[in-house]
Image (cartoon, rainbow, N blue to C red):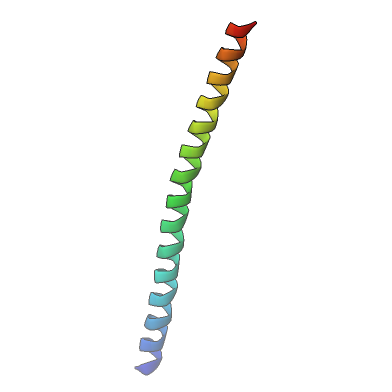
Length: 54
């Protein structure tokens, strides 16, 4: 019986670690999307201002 509990504890720790890792990846994915949008908007504004000055 203790072997089963040890296996369950190890699995719980692994799943807990994976849960934290996936949550961190989701958070970083949102940050990456926001940075991508800011970069694209900045590039569009710069290209529009460059054309109007010509």
